[in-house]
Length: 251
Image (cartoon, rainbow, N blue to C red; front, side):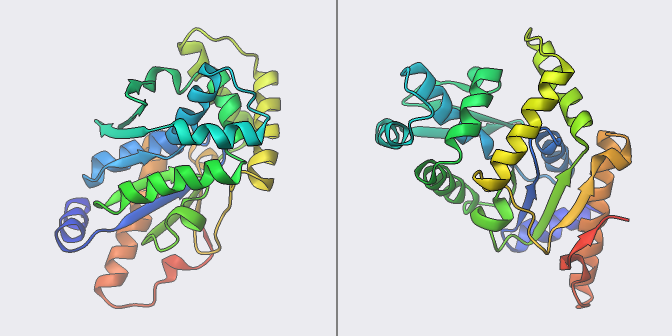
C-alpha cells in the first residue's frame, strides 16, 4: 500500500506533507522515517533558523537585539542541501551543520526565530526549496505560514517530560550534560515563546498525533502517520469527502 501511494503521488504531481509541533516532539525523526517509507525528501526547516543563530553567535552579536540581528541578515548567504535525510547548511560558504544542534545554538535560535525579519528570511528559503519537488517539511509553522496549501497536515506532540528526556539524551550523546529538571524548564519556556512569538500553531485541519500514546516508539508513531496518509489517499481515489482534513485527533 505504501509503495502504491508513493508511486501514484510522485508520478503525477508535487505534494507536501506538513508536520508541525513543539520542540523535541520528535518531528525530525518521524519526518526522516516517513521520508524513507515514501521515497520523498524531508526538510528540517529549523536548520535555517539555527544557521542564522550560528552566524549571530560567531559574529558575537547580541541575540536579544532585534535590530542588530535583522541588519545582520543582509550579510548572510545560506545554502541548504539534503543528503540521506539530513539537512546540511552552509552560511557564506562555510558548512555549519555540526554547530546546529548544540544547546547554545538552540537557545539563540529560539530567540531570533521570534523576529519577523528572521522568519521572513527563513520562510522564503523554505518555500523556494519546497516548490522544486514533493517534500516533507517539519517545523512549527509549516501548515500555517510556509505551506498553507500542503496536501497533508499533521501536528505531532508529546508530554513535556518525554520531550525533555529525549532532548537530554540528545545532548548527552554529544557530551553536553543537562539535568532533566533544567531541560523541562527550558522546554516550558520555549513552548511559551514559540506559541506567543515563534509561530508555533496547530491549524484546525491538522491531524494531531501524540507520540506519548505510542510509548514514544518511533515505528508505532510512524505507523500512525502512515495509516492516516493511506486512508487519505484511498479517500481521494474514491472521491469521498476528505474527513482526514477535519479537526482530528488520532484514535
